[in-house]
Image (cartoon, rainbow, N blue to C red; front, side, top):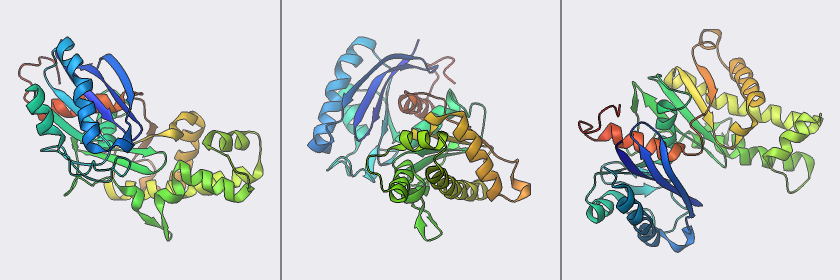
Length: 300
């Protein structure tokens, strides 16, 4: 079975392992990113992690998912990677190709999650969909006509920076934004998302009002994306997805309230389902989409 070495490079953790051309995770490992050591040290670390797996599994290629804006031809980190000092400017692809003599691809991490959702997750068989990651911020990936849409400078999907009602959307509608709203309303420090929703479920009227306002703002942004892209599906992931069915029911209702009647049934909203290895899976899917697969029978 053809296999690829996959990396999912985050600001806190590196997930890496071996994935088949059919989406089976054969081996999975994780290491601390050690972001404070900087980009050049991170690159050395990645090569060292790759060596034993390349020797053991003899992969046919290397697929990389990474934080930051990633230029796909050379895998150059263009920016938005503040978590790792001196990471912008590094070109991942030529370094790995020179070291291992294998074809390499690199892509932004949230774009890879979007590709994973279309391959093994909630958007299988869908040609036009958006994937939103709602966590500390709000980012996303765009798939149109079955192809990833990167934009002119690989920055498409940075909708967390949208201005809605005089506010930066992700500063208020992300999970961190929800927590800040809850702390401001209650005067209680040390809250997190789980605690906020536990209070909501217990009937705390203050927290219920906070969450209702937060849902309305989140829904406004999602409705704007529906108007702009007319996707068949929107896939919601990130920390909020852990709330499951109650959140899905609430956000569907809130988005419907923001849409004109003709648009209310056009787009289906679902929770992400590709799992904890979505970054690696999406990196592999990107590799398969980008390389000749004549030798990979059944890969697509």
